[in-house]
Structures are given as structure tokens and as C-alpha cells.
Length: 273
Image 1 (cartoon, rainbow, N blue to C red):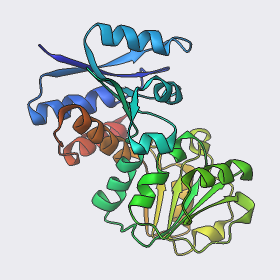
Image 2 (image 1 turned 45 degrees about the horizontal axis):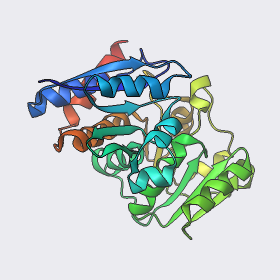
Image 3 (image 1 turned 90 degrees about the vertical axis):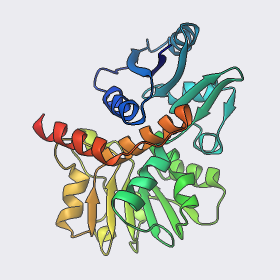
Image 4 (image 1 turned 135 degrees about the vertical axis):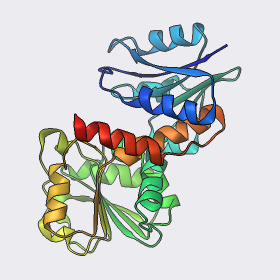
């Protein structure tokens, strides 16, 4: 019997996850289908319950349901518990297991594909929302020396820093930053309006990698700014998308697919769009 998986969200028609997981399944010889699942904004639980009742084995969860997926889970991975959000659900006899693969996906993209060492690095993360929450623990586990979480609203940055409960993590407002970073991660939504985060340009000085968690057919405003200011490596988050999907696939199937050809194909599709 073919195993059934899906990505759930609202909206969901834009999701590239079905293409990614179809390629993973073909690589690994897995008998599975992967679909898009549109849930009403007030119908996440009912939609998931119906999916499980029809034999569904697992879900990826995208906006705006990651907090509801966290509450839905019977058990959580440590990284999901730290993030307070779930992007991957696995269903079995012991209930729903919730995980968050976003952060490990980003770390693997940076250290593997891009070849940038994070151990000992001074990292600035812009934004303190849901996207940022998912990457704090994986960055700390990667051995960063310092993680500064900066947000336009300082209180949100301080709140997330306190949740991390690690002496390497601090919170800051955008206007308090004083530079001295090896890496900048943009976890804000500014790119959706083609704007760069409102930080002083001096904070880009000497940065080895500037990484935007979003992706698009063209460089984001943050990426254009980082390139102009001569940061070492500038990247969007398409590799993160593929790597987090690979971690979900491993959670479900116990196999690690080769992400490189999948990323190349997605990049070609974006370029031709």
C-alpha cells in the first residue's frame, strides 16, 4: 500500500514540497505520495484528523499552522520544544510526534553546501518571530560563540533570548547593534516587501556570510545590500528549504536523500519562472 504524506497550510498552492519529496522518494525507492493539503484557517485540527483517519503517515506544516501543530503533538523533539513551533508531524501507534527541521536545515546548508564554519562564529540573527525561533537551538548546537538576536521591537528579541537560556545568546533592538559579526541571518519578513532590515550598514562589515531565510527568483533586498557591502558569501534560503525537507524525509522514512540534484533542479525552475 502506498504511504501518504502531505504539506498543510493556507495558502498552499505555491508550495514546492511535493516536487522535492517526489524526487527524494524516487532516489530512495520509496512507495509514497506527497500532496498539498489546504486547511481552512479555523480548521487545522479537523483537517489533520481527517488526513490521519484516511491513512496519512506524516505532514509538513507551513504558515499559519506551526503553533497549532505544536499544540496538536503528543510528543515533541527537543528542537521543537525549544522553538515552540512544529513544521513536521509523524503519525504512529504512539500518537503524533512533532519536530522542527527548519534550523537544522539552515545549518546544514550553511556548513555543508556553502562550506562556512559556524563553530566559534559571532552570529547576528535579524528577527525574533517564528522563523527565528526554529533556528536558535541548531545554531547553538553548531557551536557558535555568540548569538545576538535583534528585532525592531527590542522586547521580542529579549524574550526569545531569555527562552534560549544560554549565556551565549543576547537580545537587542536594531538601533543598538554595534557590528563585530561573522555571520548575519535574516529571519525577518522584510524581503516579502522587497525591503532590507533597517540596521546600520556598518553591521555588515567583515561578515563572512549573509544568509536570507527566504528565497526568490532574484536576490532579495537583504542579499543585494550584503553583496554591495562585500560580505563574503551571500545566499538565499532555497538550500534550507531542501535540507529541512530532507530531515523530514529522514524522520518519516529513515533514509537520507541526496539534496544536491534536487536543489539544482529547483534553482533552474526558479530561474526560468
